[in-house]
Each structure stands twice: as structure tokens, then as C-alpha cells.
Image (tube, rainbow, N blue to C red; front, side, top):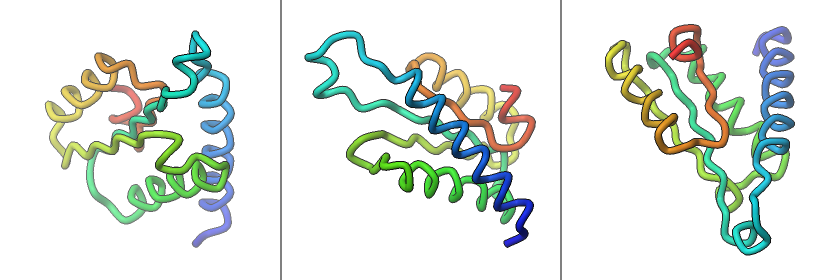
Amino acid sequence: MNKRLLSAITIIVAFLAVAFIVTSKPNTQEKKSTYVPTVGILQLVTHPALDQIHHGIVAGLKSQGYSDKKIKIDYQNAQADQSNLKTMSQKFANENADLTIGIATPAALS
């Protein structure tokens, strides 16, 4: 993997992990014991470079201690359909995903 791409993915994952930690504070002690934060990952289309970003995000979260038991990762791929992209981003907004990550500009703008 290109060193620049690896560095960029590492920086993005570190930033997302910090943002996730800061924003995932539950309101009550009872809620804290059963609360599982949701990370929404939205991707416009399947492409090897974009798929590597997705895998890098998941690997970065796992390397920071966020296993499948600690967080829920909701991955959505619009398959190059802008209407699907809009619907999926609205789903993340309606379900109050704790962190939403857009892979590629159209997904990030949705």
C-alpha cells in the first residue's frame, strides 16, 4: 500500500476515534452499561480504493479497542445510485448514529 495512503488512513482513523470517544458519552450510569454506540459508514460505490478506506476505518477502530461487542458498525453502499445515497444518509440521521463517516465526496456531502 502506498505510504501516503496508509498515512492518510491512519490520520483519519485516529481523528475518528478521538471524535467517537468525545461524542459517545451516555447520559446515565444505567445507560452506560448497556449502551452500544453506532458508527455509520456510507460509501457511494464499490471500488478497490474506497473499499481499502472502509477496511482501514474498521481496522483502525479495532486497533483502538472498539470490537464488535463495544460498537455497532452499520455499513451502507449506495452502488452508484444518488437516490440510494440520500436515503441511506437520511437513515443515519433519523437513527441518530453516534458517528457517520462518508467515504468519497458525494457520501460525505449527503
